[in-house]
Image 1: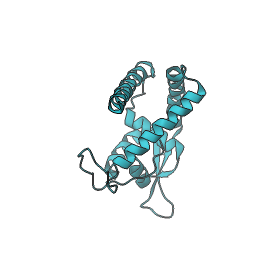
Image 2: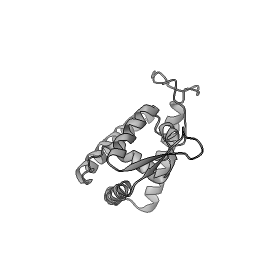
Image 3: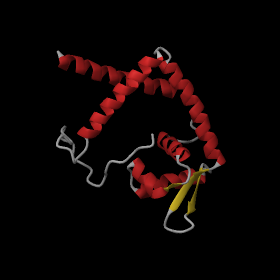
Image 4: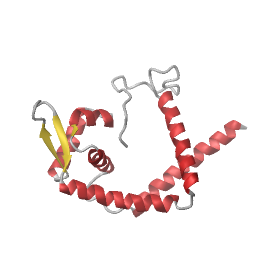
Length: 170
């Protein structure tokens, strides 16, 4: 029966997620005083050095004031620098410092080792197929979570109201 299989799949994916999370915390190096959200923010900035602060808040789907608070802490630790746009002083660009680039490189190396260890039991074709399936499920969840969709928030969760869909850089 499909319901039994889908329940088993859901539970297996939840268990896999917990196992990966636990393994990552056991094997990843110390975070140099950074928490997970800050590390994610550094990775986003590294992929889009010079990103506009307002755009970054939208990508992260957080309030601009919350992002400013995160950036101030990263700036105090010399991971990022904020610079005003030369043409429009209201626009703030975010750049990684050398310290920020070194932190991202360190985490990238550790993450590569981590993912290699987790997925070394799979053949390349299996990884590609699994990635395809995960993306398909993720796309379905985005549709289900879209307040503009007829199926949006079908589980009874209320929409945020002020958020909208955008391309994520992660």
